[in-house]
Amino acid sequence: MKAVFISFYQAFHDELIEVFDNLEIRGYTYWDAVKGRGTFNGEPHYGTHTWPTMNGAILTFIEDDKLQPLMDKIKQLDNSAPQQGIRAFVMPAEAIYCPGVES
Image (cartoon, rainbow, N blue to C red):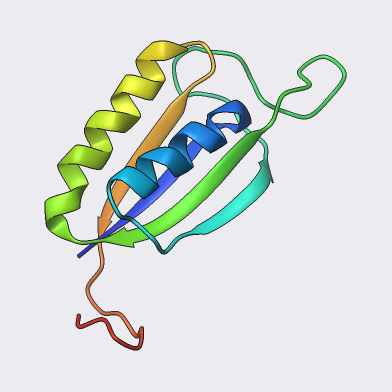
């Protein structure tokens, strides 16, 4: 099982949830007002007068076999609007307590 943290331009929210639905990724936690800027380029998302847009963030825990399809879809979203940005960070999920899920 993997933990995937995704930071993204808020406009990607509906498309990202559609990806989750298509890949049958049900569980996630979503933050809707996240500020930040990209490591190398792209526009800052600060929620200010100068930089009014905002990011969102999702944390999900998925089975290993769903990881590459998710990463492929995230790359497609990023390529559709590279100045806006979406990034995914993958970490091992060593233990989990969730009724009905084996770790």
